[in-house]
Length: 406
Image (cartoon, rainbow, N blue to C red; front, top):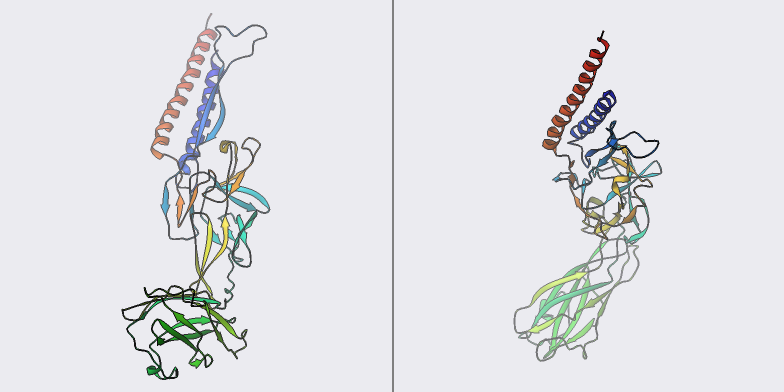
């Protein structure tokens, strides 16, 4: 009788409809990976020999396989939303247990940890006191709201042109008398407490191709002598053999910061051409304290904090994990997966390394469910269910005929 075949067909079709319904229900779930029902035929075991020409006894569901293909990426307004473009899973810590996910919808909890909707914490590489990423065992990532410690200025580089047509000045230098110097420019430096100090450099032409450089800080001259002497070649370039660089400006302090504030001035890119005095670039390595104003995530997973003093500092680096057989992962619900023996060991690394994908901040990966295809598959599964029901109905009619024989 064909009741067994029809019943197994009904069960398999019902299971297939469950999978299709689950796909459709999660068509809008971020990071969801659609499932596919795999079927297998069933034959009765033979005591001896082969089955020969005997009919099978139905169908079974071999497994439900998930499709880990890439979903579309949609831009959002949350900087902590992240999408993986390529291979890999976010490595999460849920109550001390490591789980994995493709859902990149994250936010900060009250302690500054980056968490998902289930309060699982995102993991990655931490940073040291200098803000350098430490690529060791992944830890739970936490964004620190502490103020950025000020960094005292130690060196500055000045790129400018001194006008070779300027006259030689023979009198004594006086920062309050503009007739005693040819040019001047200023830059801002910072002490160990983050206080700003204006350092002004003055340029006095003492002979052809020769300039004395004087300095003042916050309006007070730095010593009576020049900080140094610049000597130029006939082509207008600095004569590095006759000029000892860098010059050191030693700024006395009485505000409680480390004193004196010594700043090395690099004039190796200064020129002396027959054109007007001009400052092309001034850089220095100090900054004041700063308060965290925001952050963003780069393609390699580095979380960069932005501070009110214009500085950036790494807060950590997100890691991704990939598996030899992702279809062997165990779904846990809540967009989470668990490692199993079938999936293999996780291969952990920073985004853009190995075969791991890249991160896109301010975006999420949509479900990879093809809604149109699922609706068509649902119609097909419904017809299969109806056909198997007809098989049982036909067998019932045949059995009824046998019962009614006289």
